Image 1 (cartoon, rainbow, N blue to C red):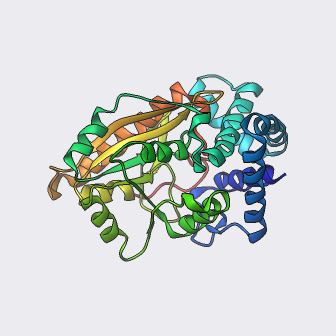
Image 2: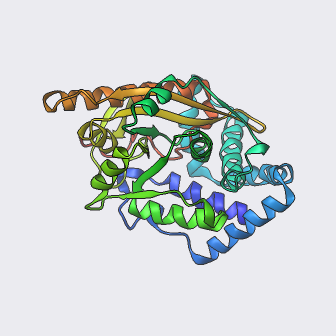
Length: 325
C-alpha cells in the first residue's frame, strides 16, 4: 500500500495541467508527514525483500491504476497514439504504467547505491568527455523521460562528473523530503530556482566545473514558453533553462536514463547547443534553435522508447489557453 500511495501522489501531480499550476498548487506541496513515513516503510521493505519480490507487487499496482485512473489514461492514450502512429492497445498503456512504476521502485535501490542490481549501459560519450576536458561546467538538460535517478547514479560513478540539480523551490523541498525518506545520505545538491541568488549560485558552480542538471519538458505557472514541433503538433516548452545557458554561455547536453526492461537501463547523451561563442545579438535565435533541437531529440527517443515518457497531462494543451512566449 505504501508503494501504491507513492505512485498515486506522482500520478496526481503529473496529471495536473502545467499552465494552471501556481506555487501553491498540487505538485508544489510537500508530502504530508504520514506519506513520508509510508515512503520510509516502503524503502525498508523493498531493501529487505529484494527487487524481484517488489516487482511482483508492481503488477498489482499497475493494474489498479490501469483500471481506476481515467484522467491519466486519457492523456496516456493521446500520447501513445502520436508516438506509435496508431490507436494504442490496452497492453501499450499497461506497459507505459509498468515502466513508470518500475522506475519509481528502482529509485529505492539506486538511492541506496545498489548499482549491482542493474545492467546500466552508457552510450558514446565524446561530448561529455569534451565538456569534462574543458573544465568549465555545462548544463545537463533532461526530461520526464526514463529514470532521473539512473542519470544521477551515472554521475556519481563517473570520475570528474559532479552534478548539481536546479529546480523550483517548491519542487526542491518536496523532492528533498522524498529522498530523505528513502535514504537521508543520498541528498543531492539542489539550487532552488526562482530565488534572487539562483543564477549567481549556478554560475559559481559552473565556474567550479560542476554540471547543472535541469528538466525542460514541463512549464511551471506563468513561466515563459514557446511552441515548437513535437510528435506532429506544436507543443509548449519552457524558455528559462535555455536562456540561463545562453546568458552564462555554456554548452548544453541532453541526457536521459532509458529503461529497457528487466533490470536494464541505457544512459544516452547528446549535444543540444553550445552557447559559449554566442553573443547578445544572436542569443534569442540561438535559444529558439536549441529548444527545437531539444524537442527533436526528445521526439527521437520517445519514438525509440515510447513507454519511457511520463507526462500524464494534456502536454500539447490542445484544449487549454495558447502558450505565451
